[in-house]
Image (cartoon, rainbow, N blue to C red; front, side):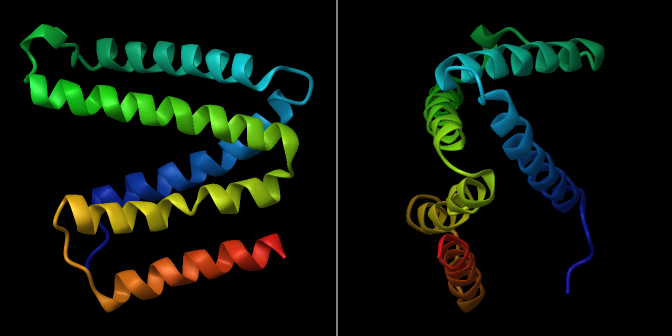
Amino acid sequence: MNNWSSWQTFALGSAFFAGLTAIFGKLGVARLNSDLATFIRTLVILAVITIILFLRGEWQKPTGLPRRDLLFLVLSGVATGLSWLCYYRALQLGPASKVAPIDKLSVVFAIVLAVIFLGEQFSWKLLLGGGLVTAGAIVLLL
């Protein structure tokens, strides 16, 4: 088994904060339009990331970045925005304990898309893990 590495620590942090996102988001859309809630969330993220970039001295002019990288970042941003709009609407309409597991089917989509478009190696572990995530989402919906 591999040693725990920094990417795994950040991935676990991402999962934890995504869990908090479901709870805080559900509370935040209780009496608010879900699209407006997504907009407010986006502004907060923009402010937090801006502060982090300046404090760490990592700010760069986007004009100096490769066009291909910028294109994919823009596409990623569009996908993220659409994901958030759907997620907040789902949280507004349904229970967080059922919305979050369905949202985590993104793991399965990421596995399939990584194999198809990034040429990542398909394995029985990916099949089993993706299958278990899918099964877990189905069980939680029943």
